[in-house]
Length: 349
Image (cartoon, rainbow, N blue to C red; front, side, top):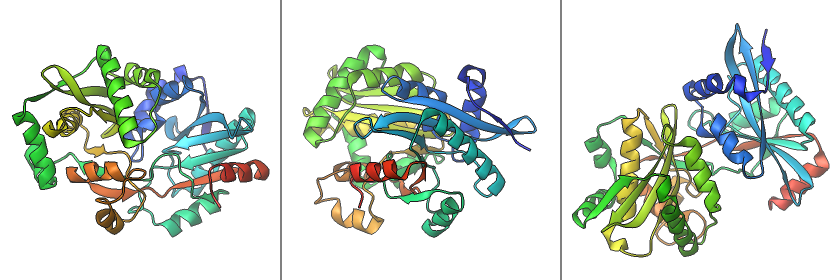
């Protein structure tokens, strides 16, 4: 028998975060502080969980917000739920609990995006699984499904050896050209925000409000996040904000100046973030998002494509990681009309 539960958060935060950190598919996006971060920027949250013999065995942190001109209340489980997908009873019980939370919040649908890699579960197996538990297919993902993951278990020399020769060269070149890297503090956030604005304009992608990066840093640092700044003669040229949960680290936010780019500061900042993650016991480093294309297409097209995530793939591929993809998303639908409206709003056929 399962014991079910939900909020208040304060009574279960530490236990929940320990469960997430230890779970093989646990993620930063299921931690208490991630819910706190999102709650400052338009989301609300509710955690549901289940115990067996007093021990947490499954759960989900569900985020809620109004979308599509406020018409639809969306529930979203980023990198979750955390459940034994081979235990049909456990999955059904947890989904029932998620449904109750969604009904209480007036949500027309809940989108799930588990952190299951396709190398672990093929697309057909995943589709059969979510359909068996009452979900419908969704090509729409909120997190980038494909990414580059670097193995941090080898020595630093071996990690460097696995990188592309040019990337390894650029890391060393930065030092030779006088770039220094230091761990930043909250006082450095305005400089990081300026770099983000420059990068967003140059590479044509959206960025968060400056208050978002400050909130993320204040909630997670220093235990589970660090800001690394690459500088030349005291001038910040590049920055990386890296986060960790359990044995996984993720590079969520990075930026660089238009000045002194020949000194390769972004490579120096990224290597410092990787070393920080390895030193704190992480065994993987997630570069967090590349174009959702097969590896053959990635390799033949990255030099010419400038749209979407293609420019960042050229940078990220050099660090020698493995290109992996999650199984994607699926939706639990409570209102078919609102779900159709949502899919049209997201540009799906």
